[in-house]
Length: 455
Image (cartoon, rainbow, N blue to C red; front, side, top):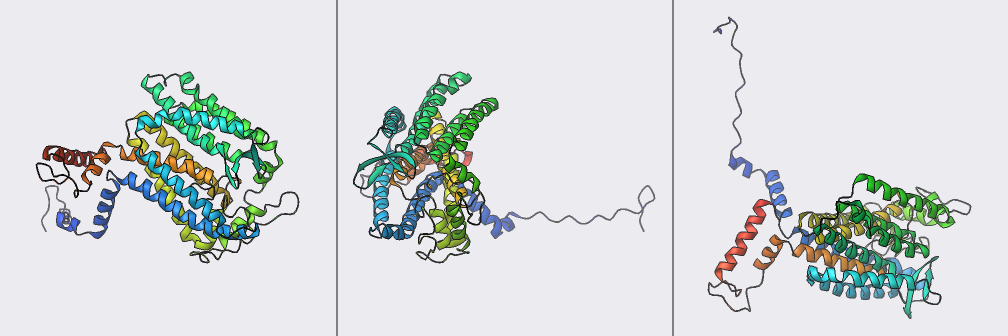
């Protein structure tokens, strides 16, 4: 037996495995699927398609569920079964027009609309408190009657006003390098937000006030506010929220119903929260079928507004609710992607504010239905019944679509996908009326953006 210089037998080493060839890696179906999915996810138009497709799917599914959940309520009010559906459909058509208009507006026009929208929202929110003009619904006086059966809630437009005005304000201050000073970061953004919150809380709408506070925190976080500043503003908001909750028996009752699974005897019965859990529990995996909900037959209050997610879980089951959650998650991811990849400060603040608004409102609504959060009385964005909430939300979605289209790589990709038929041919025969040099330049820009990560 051969020995080494030290007199010990040589160590038997296992033979090395050959490295996988490129051909074997290409033939791996799992790796191929992952690679193709990653390439598709990183394309320049991914955010654009996620925002457009996700919002339209949520709105379409919401219309179906509004029709299913509101029939019994309409018949109990001696109205046609499709009464609430027709009103929601009209609001969706008008909202689609607003979405299209907002998606085609340049960024400069969005910034120019910030102050008029804020002034109009403040005027309408103050007009709500005028006797004879403001209308009280479920104990909250935050509505204005327009005649007939149509009403608007100005506080919903206050969310859009705060996003646009706050984004324009912070962008102008960033251009002047003023956001390094905490006074310029807070003033006048925080006082204006507190003014809107005061007008909302006079009417007693705690849920909308929470959403507005979330938008304010989102704008401050995007502006780079230090931690101590967040702690200070959050402490003030917590103190005010505690005072407002303890001073209202209705809000205290909602807090006591957190996590309730059975109706209780006494002044706090937790009827709505418990029957929302019953609706979700009886749905199973695939639900009882569209239109076959039992809880909407008078057992579940606000089945087509605040608790429409519970009816969705009962009729479409876990599969339906997870689909809704996936659509909101995709919408939130696309909004974060748009805000993170832009170099325009206004686009970053506005996209972040809209994403915070929609995501926070969806979390609060779904959390209340699941019994994880107190019932705040806020609708599910793009899904619940309510034209006053649908119109500004669809305009905000149009903002995100416009910002997603405005990315350099997305503009180049959209320009390459323009139809070639019905146009005057260019000198190079491209069929789009562009010169070959310009066409090749756009192709090179799109290819360079995909390879460098600037999508």
